[in-house]
Image (cartoon, rainbow, N blue to C red; front, side):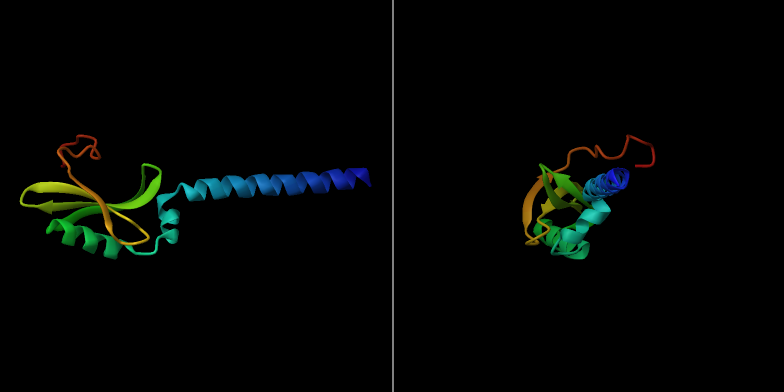
Length: 110
């Protein structure tokens, strides 16, 4: 009887540990994290383009200073702007000129 109790407890603890590990990895996956955003990628791009007055070249959902944001690169007049859009309100929270593209690995294709 004790053995059955121990096996049941072990199974429950194992299931909890596996579930916690999966939840932790899912929370750090950009693609899955976007499910909590109140706006979509299209709305974030539109907000960033309107803010800068240019065209979006790249957009992604990422953590910035511990908070999830839409990070949109917008091009206007040969300048590239990095625009951060709040995923809850859809408002631009930051915009700065991107002097160099640090995301490209310095390859020849860019």
